[in-house]
Amino acid sequence: MTEIQKAVILLSGGLDSATCLAIAQSEGYECHALSFDYGQKQRAELKAAEKVAAHLGAASHRIVHVGLDTLGGSALTDAKIQVPDYVGDGAIPVTYVPARNTVFIAIAMGLAEVLGAADIFVGATAVDYSGYPDCRPDYFRAFEKLAVLATKAGITGAKFQIQTPLIALAKHEIIQEGLKSGVDYSLTVSCYQADEDGLACGRCDSCTHRRRGFEQAGQRDVTRYQ
Amino acid sequence: MTEIQKAVILLSGGLDSATCLAIAQSEGYECHALSFDYGQKQRAELKAAEKVAAHLGAASHRIVHVGLDTLGGSALTDAKIQVPDYVGDGAIPVTYVPARNTVFIAIAMGLAEVLGAADIFVGATAVDYSGYPDCRPDYFRAFEKLAVLATKAGITGAKFQIQTPLIALAKHEIIQEGLKSGVDYSLTVSCYQADEDGLACGRCDSCTHRRRGFEQAGQRDVTRYQ
Image 1 (cartoon, rainbow over the protein chains, first blue to last red):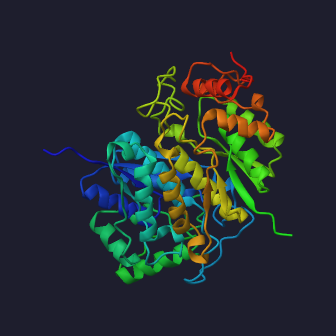
Image 2 (cartoon, chains in turn yellow, red; image 1 turned 135 degrees about the horizontal axis):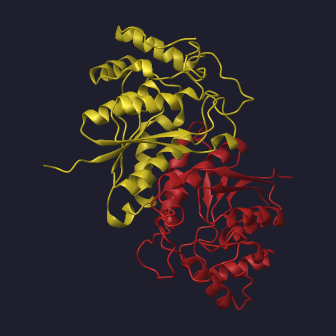
Image 3 (cartoon, rainbow over the protein chains, first blue to last red; image 1 turned 180 degrees about the vertical axis):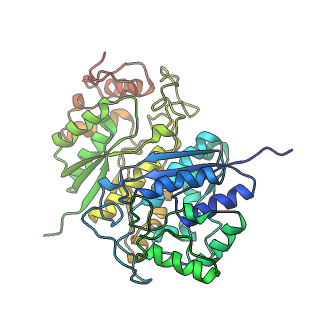
């Protein structure tokens, strides 16, 4: 019998990362979920992440505090910047959080090193997404190169792999994939400005992509709206 | 008159990063110092960083919280692992904190993006150091490549430069450089297990490199020992 491989899964509590966790579980990894309290104004996603980790049977779930709100510069962390309604694809929106994915994946790399895991799963998608630069395939390949130099792996010859199973999927395909793996999307919270009970606004970028995803998948939208 | 360039300076409160800040100041940058409360057992370095930032005239100083102690795996953050006495160069020691530099530089990159700074100064040295993988020149070059892809810079064509002015200097050369720039090393705390008043143990890796540095520089060791 081959040894069970451990993996670290970034879990925001949203639709994409829940699907990503379900995929990693279905591939047989021992999944260690990792969420971040980074000063996001929307707090419901952390509760959602806990529920999703339990629901999908993650081996562990950690919430790590990172004070990205100290830096400001994003509508998701800065009280002075409002989350806008959907404005379509194009420029990088004000919901972009500088360095967020780099910080999160760096911490995932640290946890992977401590646990002896070689795989980091990130639910990034470059299709129905908000145009953030740190969601592109080139970015993840550059991080893998960095990770080898950044850790003991550089000396032992080990490697880290950043797995992005959703990268080429449209939102409706992600939903179809997740439903096959038994994800209960009513537990997930995608809205940039969900209230404390996790009820979604229905108007922001993230809500718009999600609602269209359920429509195009021909599935009932189980999102709980305000 | 040319516009003043902003720079972000990682400032631990130790000898190297204080010197690095002094060098950046002397080069005319508007210096924004960045320190981290990452769950380190040794708390005196954060007080030292505040004093050093004020003493050297940094334009701003932020302390960002990052819960690296949630991950464990290092003598500097895990109460169950003791800081060892000096054991010489060679293997990566238990004082290595997985992902620490990657997380710190990622957050510096985020701050640089928010401030409109292109330069990040890191007081890393690959000479009299503790053998950490994330202090090597190749690592910093890989991070610069990542940074372009990770941020708006990838779209605007801007670049980030990670400046490591101490990388090729021995400890005594760093001290000589800092004294020229007016660094008061009695404010700095390098010891891995300094007490709450910042008094050093005199026995750990970091104390050993520092003490030898003062000796070889022919300078009085102003370190305050226990």
